[in-house]
Length: 142
Figure: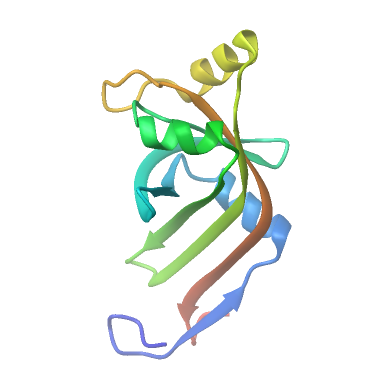
């Protein structure tokens, strides 16, 4: 790979625990689900709880319905530092479920907070069965 300045870059695969640590280091990412038999992607805030990704549906009926049916969802987050010419990306894929217990859902809503002035909607948990990730840095940086 070649970074934007034209110098060579190195890609390194992340192990599962390091990938989860990276996911936990940022507040926002993207959830991928199926809507009308096509892939749909929505930006969401998230948190990790016991290795599971917890997100809000933010009013997306299709996303809430996917989780209600136990669909496989993918959650992707990344970090990019143009000044240092580094980046990383992690994808966690697994079965989803709605958090139905009211006290637990309220705790997650409180922790996640409102985003973009929307109501959080349904609370969705993704139990990752596959976690992949990589980081990218200039070849001259170890």
